[in-house]
Image (cartoon, rainbow, N blue to C red; front, side):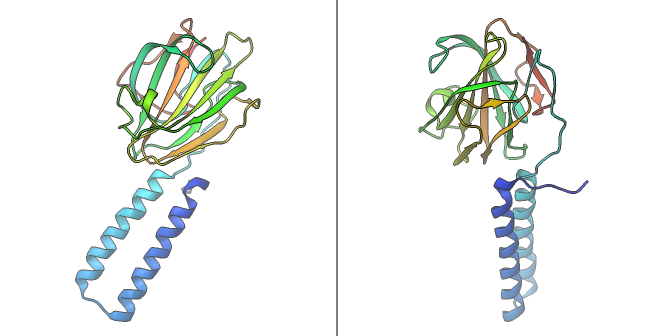
Length: 220
């Protein structure tokens, strides 16, 4: 299967290819020593390998299980705890935090279907994404989603990390989103929090590796 590159990454990949052409022209015009080709070629190769891996765009089947909540991204579960969601629902919820390293796929998908009743960006800090206070202090986008029935509701936070400087969120407020729909992308290294009602049954544990669209986080 051919490698697909996410649209968010195409400018970076094209820029990397242009850089390679320019470095090749410099070598051809000025005939540098083999040291140049070895060092520069190796560095360029590492950069391109990183970009192609980071912006890969996997073709995964969309889940169709209204009784389940799926992982919104690839990564590792770093936190599961009770918290109070104060931005929309104003009630206790269970928070599941997933850390995405720079080696993970960084596409974000909707864990479950519902109406996007609130979408709000928050400016903030850039603590390491696995820091416990990252959910409160880091730059992030907050989404509140109400499903059918309304008891099937959840919140989602796309959180920037040390390297992340762009959070893309595609749906607009008051838009219906389907389970497994692509809802955003974060670069480079970040975290996603899913907040669920206490009645949800959690199916994952801290330290577990999950895959977006494929791993069930919980069930209603």
